[in-house]
Length: 518
Image 1 (cartoon, rainbow, N blue to C red):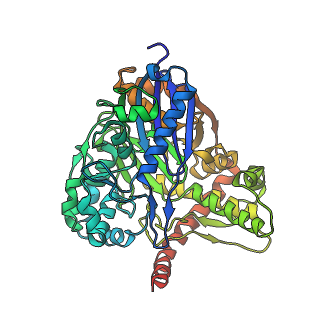
Image 2 (cartoon, rainbow, N blue to C red; image 1 turned 60 degrees about the vertical axis):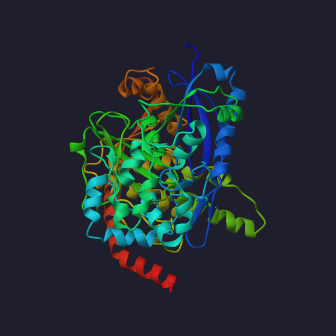
Image 3 (cartoon, helix red, strand yellow; image 1 turned 120 degrees about the vertical axis):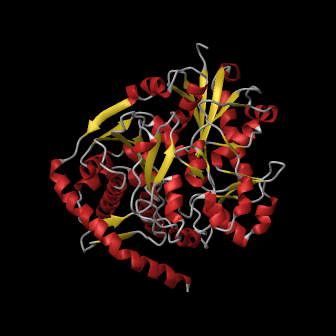
């Protein structure tokens, strides 16, 4: 189809969006609705599943109103979304409870206990992935112990994208990335959910849906979903991989030689390298990180993730806004970001060292430490807001180096995406901390693009992902940011202090959490 359209749905933590592309990868239009979820004093983070579907459907409807004759031009839709969490439905397809998000910390104690279990190394070897409180396996164990009535009503356990795919097609399926790193055997891409037996949640194995490969299999848009979205029933729907992989795919991660990295500077910090085969996967002594099936036969992505990335920036911005509000001055985050790059770069480097562990769920990469908490070291009189923000930026860059180092050598080139990738200050600091070239892919919606690329291969628009990436990604690579040689030595020293401080703080963080719980 000469004027055919592909749509990628990306249901993130902050925004739910649908983005339309030409078959050559050019973005045509987008529609977005802010996502909403609730947090609770006990560490809970929940999202209304019905509203999530309604919002996703509304974005598709908006696209159908923006793009002439979209229903007839549409080739396929692919869906991705926020990772981890637990989205449970009953036999009629209705939610049995609000979804638990990756931000939920209620199962932290179960995760921490399991990391000390005699079977944990075997689980890590199977999945290539460290356990943490945000994963469905751990959340199902919590539900088994505390809310068995909810599990008794459930018949299928989804992740976010799986729920939306179900609402679009009526098919109960999941993809190889989340299924394998949570419950599977990564070398064979099959289920091996022994973790549920070990955690006393064996009955929950019945909830695991069929695993399908999105580059090969497509469902069909149901008449009910078609009526809501303004699209044609029967339109092919592909199930994308988890959002971090789709964002990496759309953001330049694909590299058959495995020499390029991709960092997503979003709500969560994700740092990725390609393992061309299972034999290239490098597991680590901390038993942490993710090994995910990649949407290319036999290929994997290794990922280390710091739990909170731009959430740290948001926290400091909101702190400033709160002070202004107390004096009757209203300002948005965007207002405070104006000119911030220049002020941050003018502040002295490596003065205040910041550990970006602002999430109540602690940290998951490269160390597994549910008790970890954010902290500044080295504050002194005379430091101002820009000094603190520079410390936060540098802390995020140290976290990136920490993560890449756990996967072997730091890549020679790192491609970055996510909202904060627009910051020149952050790019210079990241290049200097990593001592690597840094490039931004000039792709506004990398996650939706990665999902759409999976549909493009499934629909045989391209013979394989290599050909698709050559058209969709390579022309959009931006200029190179090189390390600032006046900063690299300073940051080497700062990174050593960052790591040493973290290790010495671990027992103190645990004592703080225990004290608060008493």
